[in-house]
Structures are given as C-alpha cells and as structure tokens.
Length: 397
Image 1 (cartoon, one colour):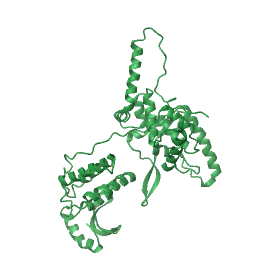
Image 2 (image 1 turned 180 degrees about the vertical axis):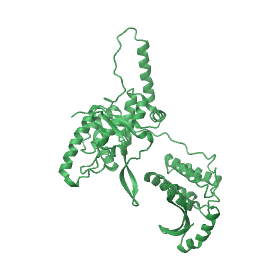
Image 3 (image 1 turned 120 degrees about the horizontal axis):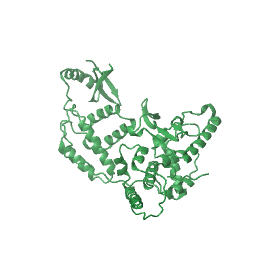
Image 4 (image 1 turned 90 degrees about the horizontal axis):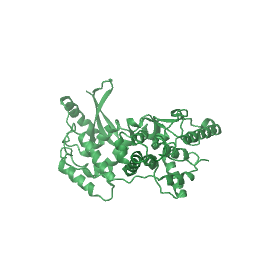
C-alpha cells in the first residue's frame, strides 16, 4: 500500500492507493484536514497503518471536512449541473450551520435543531429548504464508513412542499404571442416548445438527423447541457437525458413540418454567407454562425415578445406546460401527453396538470351524455383527438 501528498486549493491531502477495481483501474482514497504539507507527511505513516488494519475516520475530522470530501466523490458520479447544485447548497447552508461539529459528535438533536432553524427562515424559499434537507440526508447516509452515526435523520420531518403555480398560456395568449414573435433564429425553438412540449436542452440539442420529414416525427436523443471540461464549465451536446423515458419520438403537425423546412433553407443560406467559419453541428436551432442557442438569448426574446403581445411573462419551461395544458383541455388522453413530455408515469402528468382535470371530467360527462341520451337526434361526427394537428393553431404567413 502506497501513499503520497497532494495539494489542492491551498489545502493538503493524503492520497493512498487502495487497490484496483474490476477493470484493473487504480483506486485511491483521499484524506483531508491538513493545513501544511509537513502535517500531512507526519500523519501519512499512521494512515497507512490504520488502512492495513481496517480504517475508520480519525475522531478529530469535522463535518465540514467530511462534506468537502463527500462533494469531491459526488462529482465523479453525477452530472456537472447536479454537482454545482449540491455544492451551492452545501457551502451556503449546511457547512455554515453544521460544519464546525466533529463527525463523532453529530447526532439526531443537533441535526433536528439545524433543520428547525432552516424551516423558520423567511429569507429562503420552501424549495431551497427542501433541497437542503435532501442533500444533508444523502451526505449523512453516505457517511457510515466515515464514522457518522446512522439513522440521524429518522423522525426529522422534511419541510413541507409548496404547491407551485404552473406557468402557462391560454390558447388566446398563445395566438397573441405568436403574432409578435419575429426573431429570426429564436422563433423556431419557441415554436417547437409549444408544438412538442420538449425541454429547452432537448430543443437546443436537436439535430436535423433526428427530424424525419416523411414520418413527421422528432426523435429526442440528445440535449444541450453544461459539463466540466478541463476544469471549466462548457456547453456540450450530450446523449444523456434527464430520465430513460426522456428518450422518445414525438409526432409533429404539418404546420410545424413546413416551418422546419423553411428554417432549414434559411440555415443553408447562412452557411453559404458565413463560409468556412460556420460551425456545422447539424443543429436544428442554431445561431447565424451555427453555434448553439443559449438560454440567456431565449429569455430576452421571450421577455421582449411578451411585452409587445401584452401577455403575461412566462419562462421557456412554461411553454412546455402550455403544450400539455392545451392538449389535456382539448381532450387528448393523458397517456399520450405523458409520452410526448417524457414523464416517468401518467401519475406525474396528472399530478402536474391537475388544474386541467376538471375540464377533462366535463368532456367525459358530455361524451357519455351524447352516447346515452341522444334521443334519436343526428349525432355530431367528431374527429378523433389523438394527435395535436391543430392544438396550437399557428399563424400562417
């Protein structure tokens, strides 16, 4: 067993080789808490000896030191965005509240007191309180091998979830907005969100190779996301989507197909005009030079167009909610909506859009009334509503 000293961000660590994994890759364990290189060198023999016997964390390790090591390990197993999320809540809330305590002293009462204090804070949202609770629970559970008592979070109730008001437009608001949406490159991603319910990352990462003009479908297989590359955040096209059900094929309407064809022709003109400097990434939604469209630009266009159209401002994600709400209120089966959105289950769809359920019930009642009480009158012939061909009536040129 071998070990060495490493320096990172002004702190010193003992790094010990602890064997190989099933692919014969070297496994290492890092030990933190040293202010000087000499302190780490002096403690190295003891760490090596204890590892040979069966290691337990030294009693003097603070929860802050443990959390920083926990975050380092977490970075290897989660996406960059999730890691930044964990790091922010840990550094801004958990470490200031519990970091000074030794891990051997952490117990139910200390953590319960901390969570009670978090619950009583008026300057942070309920959503933030829930994130703090969830991340702390995960860190404590993962600390068994480090000597953290297990079951600390037992009987500590999580902050109550608040019912968030969904952002969405009515059909009338959609029409008003579209009439004022004139941005050359930013019109398409917004229209695709309304017509398909796709997430921002899925639209920004959509390639032409995933658009089938003959079958009138879009295959969701990639997304634009931020990842850490060479120690710096960078936008990349990733094949990793949010969940397994996020990989899906969405049927699109004739107007959207026509809009995509016209946009493709415009892109070809841009390529010729820009020449060799054009970034040909095969992206459906791209800037004039072929680069990916970042959310900042879309937010600006949304804000400006909402003001012109005189409709309430919603986020880009609100377009996804608008798509689902329009479908459900128009009588489309929730299972179809679930599949279009890529939700894990139909329960998620129904729970998220419970505000539309009363309308669905009314449609069902009217439908059964016609079947049972037509009194011999000629029944209206209604088209089956299993597609969204006219769910969002686009304004034609």
